[in-house]
Image (cartoon, rainbow, N blue to C red):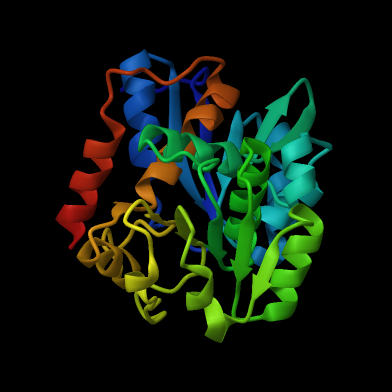
Length: 281
């Protein structure tokens, strides 16, 4: 890759950001599309994040993907925001255009795209979402927009689950965290949107024997590739999808926002990132 003063620069901002797979994926797409651009990681101090984001426009960056815990700050730093970002209350994409900073949320459509890619019909029955943070808010918004018939919520903080319901899914049903297994009987999809399953965060246990065989399990976590949540679902012979699908799903529209074209189909994103994760084990 030859860089010049005309090379467009985009990246991912987070705290931390070294774990992110976005540079690998985005640069593979950039190379395949033969775009004069580069995609980098930007570690950002949360206490100075808004100042950093407001520097995107004067520095001439194309834009940034934004990871937790900076997505709310990203929304507040922008001059404008699309309907999805405003509704969710967080932005995972910032784009510089004509002297202004625009905020977007591609997590919600990215989740639905990932479901469609794995033949999961979110309209086929009730959905249980575990968690009430930024990932859960994006997922619930995506489910509501896609026509999920019923949304059930469980979170360790019940107040946060009620707030999520009131904000995004007024007809949703909130379960006590300790009673989450009661929500499993007739669901068609259960989504882990908590941090349980990540290293040092503990595991998420469910009584998978309560589930209909047609139930699918979707974990928003992609490292490790198989969490305890997914291992339990697999042992019950249920369809499982890990967080790589959502990562790729949200990255596709972000790439288009940055560079004005869809990423090339010639890159097998799933195989690329799966190989990287296996090498890190």
